[in-house]
Amino acid sequence: MRLSRSFLPTLKETPSDAQIPSHRLMLRAGLIRQTASGIYAWLPAGLRVLRNISQIVREEQDRIGAQEVLMPTLQSAELWKRSGRYDAYGPEMLRIQDRHERDLLYGPTNEEMITDLLGQSVKSYRELPQMLYHIQWKFRDEVRPRFGVMRGREFLMKDAYSFDASYDAAVDTYRRMMLAYLRTFQRLGVRAVPMVADTGPIGGDLSHEFLILAPTGESGVFYDGALESKDWLSDPIDVDDSASLAGFFNTLTSYYAATDEKHDETAWAAVPEEKRREGRGIEVGHIFYFGTKYTKSMDISVTGPDGALLYPEMGSYGIGVSRLVGAIIEASHDDGGIVWPESVAPFRAAILNLKVGDAECDALCERLYDAGDEQFLYDDRTDRAGAKFADADLMGHPWQMIVGPRGAKTGTVELKRRATGERFELPAEEALAKVL
Ligand code: ATP
Ligand code: MG
Ligand code: MG
Ligand code: MG
Image (cartoon, rainbow, N blue to C red):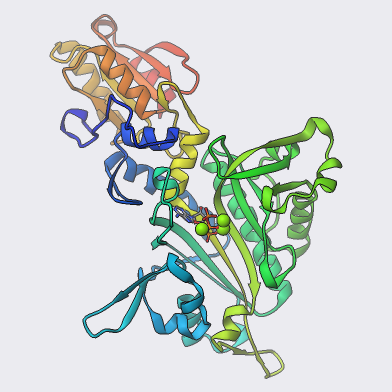
C-alpha cells in the first residue's frame, strides 16, 4: 500500500475521550473510528489486523477438527423462547421488530441457534461428535461501553460449539479446545493465562477464562509464574488421545491461576512466594462446558448406542477477536506507539523514503516495495523525515526500512526493528531477507 494514496488517517493529538493507551493508539494510528456509542468502523490498517487475528484463530480451530460455518447476526425470538433465555437475558440483548411485528434480536451469542441447527440434521450418536464455529459480529447493549473496541456494543467474536455423545467425550473436547486456545494466543504474540471461572449451577471445573496481563485490565488476577514459560506450539500433546489430553489438563490446572472473583487465599499461600504473579488482566477468551443445558431445554436428542434417546453434551468457546486488537496493544506498546507482534501486524514493514523525488531514493524504494508483495507500507509522502519516523513508530510496523540519499547511492538500507530499536545498515537484498 502506498501511504500517499491510502486511507490511513493518523492523528498527532491525543483524542481526549480515550482513557486507555490502546484506545488512544487505535484512534491515533488510524485503525478505527467510532460511528455510534460502542460501535466502530474498521479502517484499512485496522481491518488487516482483525483479519490476521481471525486467520490464526481459524487455523487453530481447524487444526482440532472444528468446522467453520457462518450463522446470521439476526435471530428469531422464537428460538430463544424455546431455551427460556429470551426473557432471562435482560437489557444487554438488542430486540428488534420487523415490518410484520415479528420479534427478532441481534445475536449476543449463538447457543440456541446452533443447537437448533444440529437438531435439524443429526439424529444418531454415530453422527457425533460435532464441533462448529463461526467468526461473526455480536451485539450486546453494554451499560457502559468503554475503552474503544475493548468493551464495544457491536464486536467480533469467534464462537465455537461442541456436541458429544457422552460426558467423557465432552471433557476431551474441552481439553482439546483449551490447548487450541493456548496455541492461538501464543501465535498472536501474547500470553493469555487460563483461569478457573464460575460454572454457575452446572458445577465442576470446566470453565476457564483466558486473560492477558495488562495494567488496564478489568479483572484482578493471581497466578503461578510457572505458567508464563510454557511453549504450547512445540508441546507434543496428542489431541486424539484421552490420556495425553488428561496429562496436559491436569498439569496445567495444578498451577494456581484465578481472577479476583474466584481467588482463594489459602491456595494462593501455597504458591512459592517468588512465583506469585499478581496484577490486572483482560478477558480475551472463555471456554465453558455446560452439559445438556440447551439440548434438554430445547429438546434436541439423538438415538444412543442402546437405542434409547440421549441429549448431546455441549460446550461453548468464545474468543473476543475485536477485543484482542485492543488487548494486544495494551500488552505491547511504548511511548512512541504500537509495537505489533509480527503475526498480527497490518504490514510487515514500512518503507520510509526520506527524499521523495530523488531518482536513486525513489528507485530503491520501488524495488523494495515490489519485493514486499503488498506486505509493505510505502511512505512515499513528501513530508519531512521526522513525521515519517513518528508515524511509522505510531503504527507499530515490526520493521522500518529507511532509505536516504546517501544509502541509496550504494543500495544500502537502514533497517530498524520496532520492538527493540536495533538498527542495521544492510544492502537492500539482505534487508529484505531479514524482513520477509
Ligand atoms: P466481559 O466479562 O468482559 O463482559 P463476557 O464474560 O460477558 O465478557 P463472554 O460471554 O464470555 O463475555 O464472551 C466471549 C468473549 O467475547 C469474551 O471473553 C470477550 O473476549 C469477548 N467480549 C465479550 N463482551 C465483549 C464486548 N462488549 N466487547 C468486546 N468483546 C467482548
Ligand atoms: Mg459481559
Ligand atoms: Mg466475563
Ligand atoms: Mg466470559
